[in-house]
Length: 197
Length: 313
Image 1 (cartoon, each protein chain N blue to C red):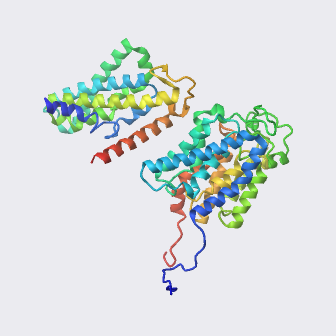
Image 2: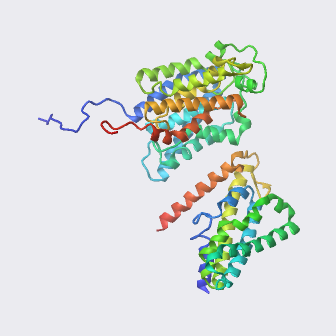
Image 3: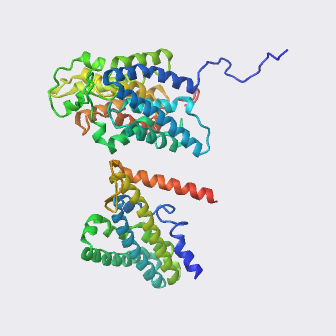
């Protein structure tokens, strides 16, 4: 059990997809304007990761090595389609806010990266925990980034304004602000990592 | 008796210069422009300058202490950053604006890269552009000169951008600083006094400022409002932050090219971008963006203007 727990945990800190592997940065830059978008994107990506990791690890003995990427994409695209249709049906507002970045989960490098680097050579149960951990790590990273950006850039958190008279810095709501925040956080996590070693 | 024979490696002729001495001289050269700004806009301008300098120093000290490096706030570079940032702000900004700006200048513009000598961009301009993108409302609220109530008025360049007529602003007004604008940019006379001091001391050379100003003049003259060769080039040179930027910010040693040829290219590039932003861009003024963009191009300019080693091909 502890082994599985470790598989799960590594995606959150030690191999965090955003801050350590630096994967999936494009949706991170684009949707991290508000926390609710970040959570939505994180949950969507977690679901896709979980599904694709399980299916690909189940099919790993049947997927020919030469055309593995197209096969992965078919599996991933199936789950993305499910996600997008569900989101459209139950949360059209979020779907509109995330826009093109929901279908683009198909080419999200975290999903493909885990399929390629992990699921295709690991057991089903390991892949399940790996996908879950990576998804949660991605979601937590998105919440952190979008929390900073929403609070400093719009003065709110989850849509509620917290501090009276606080004048938000517009730049953090812009793409340049996203690059700044992600860059500083990456540096911060590198410092933490260097200190631990 | 003490051994008077000192054996040392060359160079044996030693000039009494150091980084921090040059920095303090630049600060001295900036005093007239600040004094003029305070005279024109009142005591609030002085508070903006003081807040900028103090918070730049505090940020530098705190960050260097936190990262366990030597605290070098006495070398004058943080003071310059604070002064230049304040000179680039309107006189009646809320008190926290220069503090946040100076913090951003020092923290993101300078210390993140490793401190003095390592930064890619001019720290003061990094702070200004951050403030401009974050709180445009405050950064474009200029007050009328020589009137001590908070009447806002647009800068001459902003009026020009909106296509309004510029009434009763003479070249002399522009030269002496009787116009709306940032604290340190308005009085051309004071800025030139400081610049001449630096020229005489040999701390800056003409290779960046003159091509810069010349290019802006030439371009704004060619692409005038009523067809080719009808532009008011003198107006464009005297207004905005061109003189401040050309003499005090584009010439920053760290972020400008090393060779003479490279510096001329740098100056012309700054001039081109400034003129393009002023004539066709969304902002009325483009000096800070022009200098920052050319800062980014500095390494590549340096690469292509490398001097030949004597004797090599």
